Length: 496
Image (cartoon, rainbow, N blue to C red; front, side):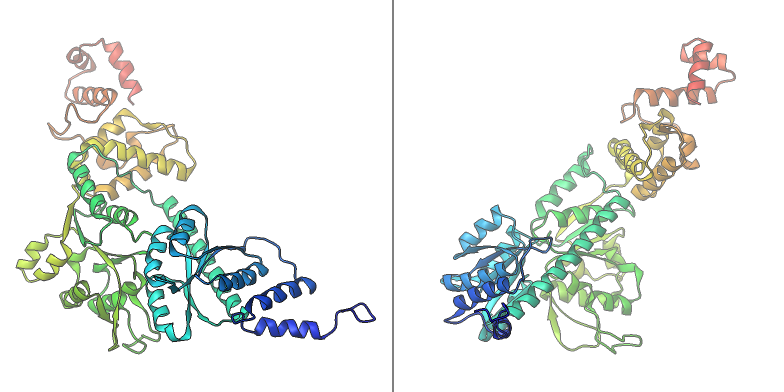
């Protein structure tokens, strides 16, 4: 096949180019794929494994089609496994790392469309490409609505396959960026430990985790700053939608018109400034969870549209007549008395019933005395890592002050107080002087409970402080405490 100069004839590269543009499926599909792979090696296009190598699973009941696609993918450097049935495919997804699945919509007596949701649940991060004849494009679009990444119409060319793989690589790159940003957010915002010693909170968590795998609407009630958003994220993470996004909407943040656009999207030109169409957060949450924070502040004019979406899963974008659908699970939170708002005409009663299928209540921090110091220590260690400090905890005075404070701002106030203490301390512990001055105020009688979650050292420090404050002299205080004045002097110096 060599000419006199030892070179390949010009016809071979041109012929290879024709193969690369030709259809790979048909009666000569396998020979073409074999020749295509061989000629790439002849031309010096050696395949090297690297970070872009994919682990691909081909699911098709026709062996010749699987073989043809496999050879084409392997010629591009990817690793490929095959499955002829849905059962075999699910078994591989459960036991092997798979990046991308090529799924035929017709698997003999099985339906690829019915198999798709199970594959998504078995391996949430996998990309699924459905393969279908031109006549079944509508079915392929339905498969994408159910979570498929893309579809490939039969017959297809190597170039179409190459472009599809390039799109998947782009999507994977964006997902890696999103994962990296999420890790940075977790590093910047402490996730509170949901373990608790309070029976009321434990009862709430038990119900939340039982309802999490369902699609039931959940209404979370509690004062501002009690951790309603944290509980909502925990429910989503334990749901069957965990592989899809959880999209938050802050209901009091915008006017009724802008909030409707943020929720449902708008068409281009729908209002002044709408230079581009937007999909809205309902569409962005399709397949996942929509978290409506402070739902009690939702404008009255928007409540009927939300009610219709909850009932029918249908909505229209602002300025558009086309009806759209979205499969979204609703979680909502409020610090308001919605029953009082219903009586006053500020909230629709039927919307409350739709939202309140499962009701969860989070108590304020002042009613979680058994958990208070554990949460404070957790936050201290988080901020210590953030600032690069090695801290052993709080001084007894600081713990006593944290315990007796009523925390009207709940977890938000506690978080800010601990962050301040960690930043200001130059010692191995956070002391009372490092905390906000409100915590240094002496409580009224009866505010400290003997038997609460306070160390003996903290109780002793608080008791000594109160006795000294009400005594005429240190000698009188020592007499009341039953210790020598020299001992009291040493304790007083130690306690600052």
